[in-house]
Length: 230
Length: 230
DNA sequence: AACGCGAATATGTATAGACAATTAGACTGG
DNA sequence: CCAGTCTAATTGTCTATACATATTCGCGTT
Image 1 (cartoon, rainbow over the protein chains, first blue to last red):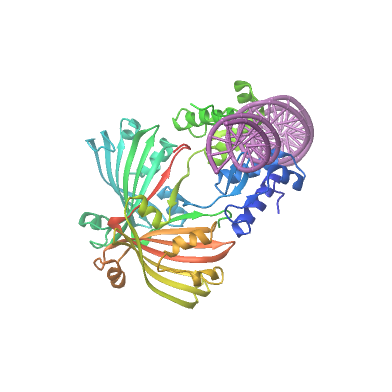
Image 2 (cartoon, rainbow over the protein chains, first blue to last red; image 1 turned 90 degrees about the horizontal axis):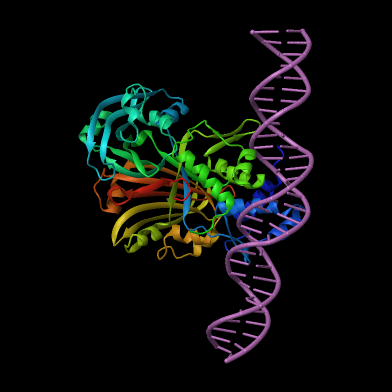
């Protein structure tokens, strides 16, 4: 039992009231002056606790009116999109990457126009295929990628360590394996695949566009929402 | 152009340096004393800016060592899991719900033991099937659900307004349509489906366990990672 | 060279006070 | 009854200071 800071303790006690349902949405949360007296501390301290809850979306604060329990309109989950190499090794499996093709082409896609490096390859876990990847990388944005050894290092891993802190959007859907995909992943044509399409920007400019097709039985994505969160 | 608070301005300027790549991962961020002199403000103000960035995961702060740009190990995306009724109407389509079965049973599932209400139904968009739903609701946790008219209101919508602020976990995968599923959704057996399994707790006690099978062509999930303003 | 230890340093937490900004609610005049 | 105004409650921001805490660095000893 480590001594938690006071503002953290206050935060957690209020959070517990909300999550347990004792304070329903719309209910008034004690104000800063009130909590200040209750805990015998300075206003900045309770402010830190309440601001944190407001930032997390659990409460809504309005000047003059007070602090109220927010109503959850859309549950926004946190989806951890880890680097595949890291994720596979974290599961105790041996990660592998097989580069199938590599071309420098001029893309005419509206999402990613200009000169790109086009890659195709397969991610392996313990030697068996896990996912097929088709990727475009803007060589205007990342010229260094042309010199990278992308047969040894998966492009996602390489990019993560060379072009950090990008903005991204993931679209998740399902699809049936095409003949080409089935051959690459060694599955039957028509087998269901989990498809993740990720677009990545750096200061507004497209960096990479990737389609990953996972063998459905071997992969799933997990998104969590919650305070304590196991 | 509204006057942003000073701590917000400081935060944004540092964030811009990081996102543009000017300060790469591992680079040292000016310390609180330094920024305090630079902006001519109190330490608490720059502390608020840096703490905020640390909370967002953009920087890592270590006592005695200083503040450093973090390396993005796993991009954590925000996945908005909205209520289906809301999502469909937001797309300009007419939302519908058809309840197929409703049973009160005693569940022996380890994830959700005890008395439950078991429901099956289909979500419709503009009259055509969008997703099949199989749901268990703990009647110990939510006894009021037994009196709800779940033919008129989809259980997800009902729960959202009656049992707010729960913790949840979503597992996203792909599967091939079983004969029963194909019949309910009016698709072919073996067609790919996007499957979302959501477990929901309230103060640690299971509230609901739901499997949603989306017709792959008609639905996709979108997860975004933006700096802050996104 | 290896180890232990103290000190310097940067962050973490907290206080007490001040003023600004917002706005719900009361009050006022028509 | 309505519209406009004023007031006061509440949060938002910021200052200046103090002490706590963790951790790196260098020094001295072995």
